[in-house]
Image 1 (cartoon, rainbow, N blue to C red):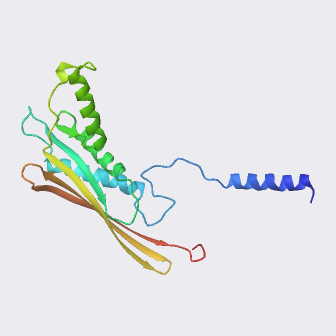
Image 2 (cartoon, rainbow, N blue to C red):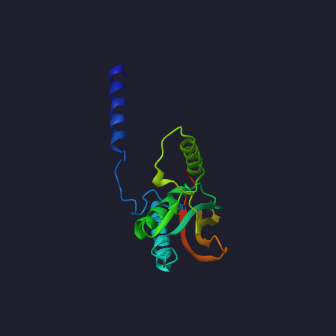
Image 3 (spheres, one colour):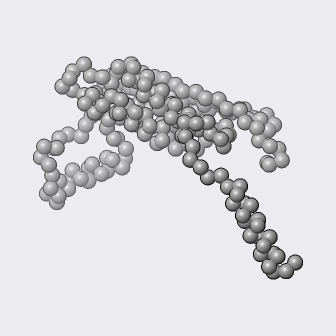
Length: 201
C-alpha cells in the first residue's frame, strides 16, 4: 500500500471517530445517561431541594423577633461511603436554597470554613492596625451561630457476579448550639442496580 493510500485510510478513520463523538448539553436534573451505581447530579439536586424545603417547613430558622435574625452555619458532610463525592456541591446547594427562600432579612448564614476564618482574621488585623482603611459602620463581633447543620453519607454494597447493588443513605441534622438539642433531622435515600460486562473486566 502506497503512502497516499495509508494517509487516506488514516484520515478516514479520524473522520469516522469524530462522527462518533458525543458532545452536548443536558439538563442537570435529567437521568444520567452514563449510568453506574453512584449518586448522580439529579440526586444531589433533589436532595438539596428536599432538605431545604423541609427545614423551612419546620420553621426553626424563622425568628419570632423581627429585630433578631436566626443564625446558622454548615459544618460538614462526612462521607462514610465507598465513593469519592465532592461534598461541597451538596452543602452549597442546600445553603444557597435556604438563603434564597428564607431571605437575608430572616436568617444569617455564616461561613465557618477554614479559608473564611483566615481571611476574616487577616483583614480585621489589617484594619485595626491602620494598614488598610475600614468602614466604621461595619465594625462588630464575629457572628455566633444559633444552629449548625451537618450530615453523613453512608452506603451498603452487594456484589454478585457482574451485578452490583448500592444503597445510599444521606442524613442531615440541625443542632441547637446552646442546648445541644437535635431540633431537626431528615434523610435522603437512593438505590442503584448495575451490571458490568464480564468481558470488559
